[in-house]
Each structure stands twice: as C-alpha cells, then as structure tokens.
Amino acid sequence: MAASKLCRHLMPTGRTCHSPAMGGSAYCYYHGPKAAPRRAARKTPQPVEDELDLVPASEPSCIDLNSQRILFALASNRISVGRATTMLQCLQTSLASIREQRQFNLDMADAGVIFETAPEETSAAN
Ligand SMILES: [Zn+2]
Image (tube, rainbow, N blue to C red; front, side):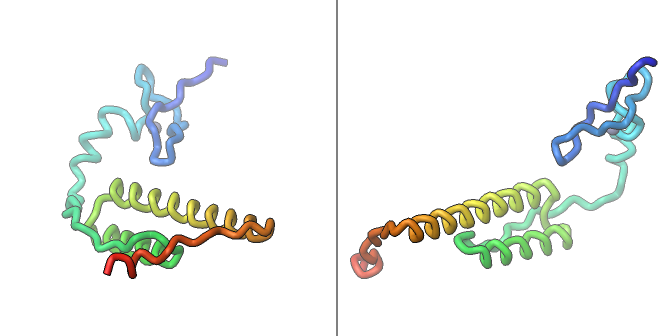
C-alpha cells in the first residue's frame, strides 16, 4: 500500500493540516493554490487596526482586563486575528511569568529568605 502524501499547509497551531494532498500537489483541496483566490474573494471587511488602550500587565487582573479589551476589539473587527493572537500570546507569557515569580517568592519565604526592599523612589523624585 502506497503511503499518501499529506497536506503541507501549516495551521495556526503550528501543526500541519494532515489531510491527504491532491495528486501532484503538496496541498489538500482546501489549501492548494486554487483555494487561495476563493478564500481571498470572500467579502470580509478588513479590520481597521485600531490602537487599543491596554494597561501594564503586572497583575493577573490587568491581564484579564487586557484580554477582554482584545477580544472585544476582535469581535467588533477593530483588530486582525493575527494581531489579537500575538497580543493574547504576550499576555499568556506575562501571566506565566507573574505566576512563576509568585511561586518563587513563596518558595523563598518558605525557605526563610528575606528580600531587602528598595527605598521608595517616589519620595526621592519629589
Ligand atoms: Zn490542507
């Protein structure tokens, strides 16, 4: 039994399509070169790519707020899927970093390590 070639199209997840490739093509029916004009012909209005008012992602609640703003902007077609994806991935990284830092602080507190706090810069600036 000859192994059929699989479509080489990369999905947004980073994995390949896994559908059988069309004869003589590296892509399946949906991702081949003939599919591109059909997809481009759709009358989907392009997002306007608005500037978003996001807050610094220093706390999980800020990340929630930013996520909601990004989703609302995406839902109202004010930003593209690609831009929203990038922003949400950055927020995911920020959240992981915050959680990692908090766990590190808890582990250090359990171990009895006390961090010296920097003097308040707000009073020095005034
Ligand atoms: Zn495919």
